[in-house]
Image (cartoon, rainbow, N blue to C red; front, top):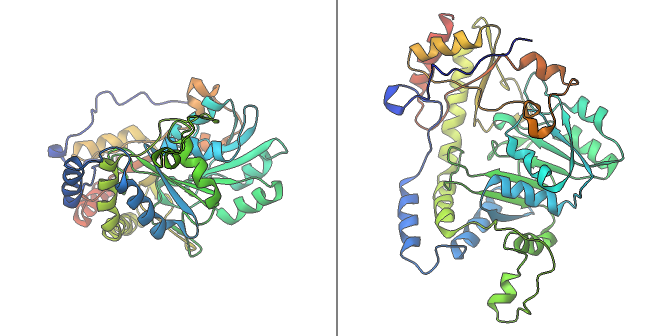
Length: 383
């Protein structure tokens, strides 16, 4: 199969050059909130982190609890530890995702079994999960690609049969719903990312929602070197650490940013969803291109990415957009292309079929519906 060369001649666009692919959204109140923190006693993990966790729980966690950490990757690693995964265990994971989903397994010596994509959504393919699952499987990890929820009922049916947890990487999907349930209140563990260009940004940061609240004390110890900070702050800590911990806590600086975005979240989400709907309208009936995740009726799209499949000449497509000052990119890549994961697999036919065809179009709070109309006009002229 032909593999494209990098677009070295097409450098990353700057905002002044046209319609860029990504742009962070930092509310004005985030700037005020950070300034207040910087003038306070607490700039590390303090009362703002607790406040952010409490408000996030109310918004997304249902009856679960939220644990704030330094990145989405931290939250995933923490979930894998809390799920009891050990060296030599097998997990089923999507091959198409940010490497952050799967790299923590390399820390842990956990064996990765890559599942193929669903060609209609680029989410994990439930039928392939069913083929891969066995008595050695200790967890199923799914990623809501672009913000569209996976087939959660089917995944939970498999997990229930094998008595294993489902771990959701919801980095793209705050505000998404599946059959009326919020992403965050469905599975044993759900991770959210607050990296620079996500719906909510804390510069970098993450949140882990755990359904079993009894796991929260352990989670809080592990994110702080294994130390029980509540005991330490009461002056009753006996100065022993009994489990391996990490430096995974969030700071009050980050939490102040997160709180400001959380207070604006309805507006953030609705803008993104409006832009996605504008792409659906603008590309309806367009030849040579198909929008991914545009046809689901039983789930709502959080609209972090707008991804399309182009039938031919992705490089030509990108160049045609770039000539009109519109940026596009692949963003994510199949993980088995990376040597650290042991090389390319030969049992992923759907991924093989789409890997030269998918492309991500601009979607963020600075993109307007008029911008989308322009982008769609350019696309309809062909490439």
